Image (tube, rainbow, N blue to C red; front, side):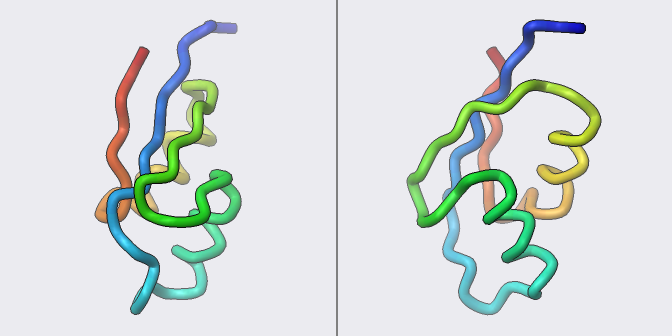
Length: 61
């Protein structure tokens, strides 16, 4: 298992998003724009990022 992490920053508001996108943002642990979380870099996290890629910025560590 890798020790890689990704830092996910929400850069846009969830206003006008679908329920699935809002649920994904919540599952990632984000609450508001400019909020950051650090998650493990795995296929599950990458799939969640893909769903909301227009709302977040991802930085690999």
